Image 1 (spheres, helix red, strand yellow):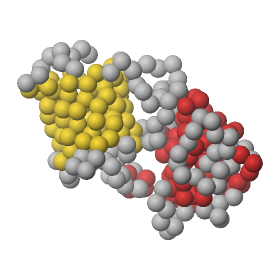
Image 2 (cartoon, rainbow, N blue to C red; image 1 turned 120 degrees about the vertical axis):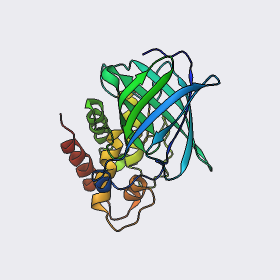
Image 3 (tube, rainbow, N blue to C red; image 1 turned 90 degrees about the horizontal axis):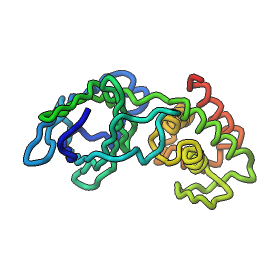
Image 4 (cartoon, rainbow, N blue to C red; image 1 turned 120 degrees about the horizontal axis):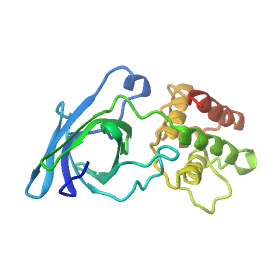
Amino acid sequence: MSLICTALVLTIGSMRHPRSDSELGQQSRLHTCRFTLVNGQWQGTCTPAPEDLVRVTMSRANAITTGAWKKGVDPDEVWAGKMVYTDDAEKIEIETYPEGTGVLRTGSGWFPVSNFQSSPSSVQFQFDTAKEVPPSDLDRQIIERASAILSSDAVWNRADNRKCSPTDTRWSIYCAMEKATIDVTGAFHHRRPALQVVRQIVDERTAGRNYHHRLMDYNNDPSTHLDDVRSLFAEALKRIHP
């Protein structure tokens, strides 16, 4: 799958504010993206039409920068760029694998790519924002590692601000997951499947509490105890097939 040009521009729907996990499982939101080479850039749109218009710029990259997806599996091709909104922008990455499969990593989640095809005159693929990428063997290792990191009250940071440092000696739920992700995969992405599984369980446990940042607010909630944290990781492991 070789391309003549290294720049890609597309238009897709906003994914900054994803629906709840229960809603995501109920309705397919398959987007078909098609691009052509225009004035030295790959340009195109994704259908169905987005609720609000978004512009994305991408180029070929040497490697994924936000951590391996699966153990011992390297992508055929990697793209990196920005999803630009009217008021901000977010980084995205796409990795492709044999038979046109792949993963689109965004600030709202990791979504499966299908039917990826490229030629000297066109690029196209599909992705479904209602079907986030399922956890891999590395995601299971991340949760196991986070559980080992956050092993006692002595190392539990009850005043999380989602700012984590390599020199930390006490960790919140979020920072334990960040450290575990880096330890296991070499880098961090806050929407990788391991964290999404944990967020889903927190959502289920705290329905009606109106948390602004689920992991931070659950961590800092005075009603949350270490036993709750331990059971959170244990439940996440049960939901990931070994």
